[in-house]
Image 1 (tube, one colour):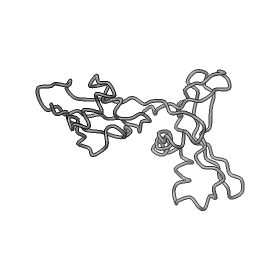
Image 2 (cartoon, rainbow, N blue to C red):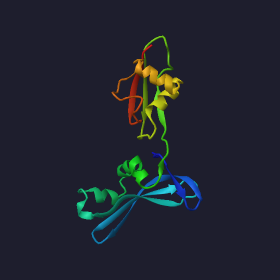
Image 3 (spheres, rainbow, N blue to C red):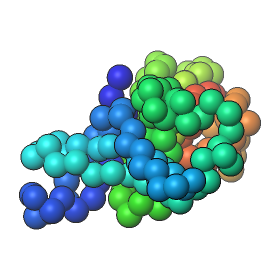
Image 4 (spheres, one colour):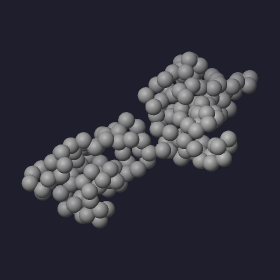
Length: 174
């Protein structure tokens, strides 16, 4: 399962490149302090980049079993860190836009239409951009339909402001 890439400057390519998580951790210990990195590889040249997960943390302050998960390269833990947009930004990289799927019939004025927008990973972009793309609407037209309650979110989020996380179900009322 491939996670969304991180974009950063590659010293070998001499340009911004996409880096993909290898799913492997690198751990360094100095006395009681630990550093933990998630290893990424450049898509173009294969250069490695270490995304800092933990820095100078006392080994005894970690929850029980967490260090073991880092040492055995727990794939779930690697996936959790590779999809953490805030962690990637703190490390000076940009998050690539992950793929999202909008499932449902084409918009019809004749009746109520229910549409599901879903993604595996949290996205940096707003849900409204995906919905507008599916419905072929301008930003202004989309906001007007939301105000008039012609587009209603059944998942409880504000469609104009929320970011894509998990699944959003919305209904179009003619």
